[in-house]
Image (tube, rainbow, N blue to C red; front, top):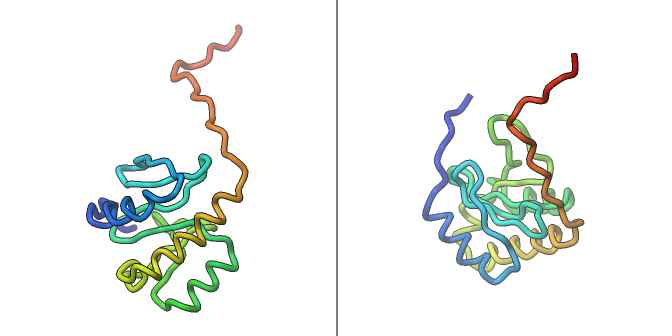
Length: 128
């Protein structure tokens, strides 16, 4: 298994600049910058890559247009609606904006994700 790699600060700043024009909430997940729309993960940085959420047909279009694009598989587990953009996309402002727009439109269409109530860390007592 690959060792966990810290998120690229440079990519985090790049994503932050582009995402500023969207109605998205910034959070850190496992030390990585991630942006959410209506409680749903939209785009973030993982290691040296930018991941974003896409519906299946848009993922297929991304893979067809960019050979280096890959499914997002942190720790070897595939996250079904997420893909990693290749550097050729985030090195091209127009192409990056295009894919952010596609992702944002999709994530904005999803129902609002409600925050789960935090459970108490105290162990529950069982009746004797």
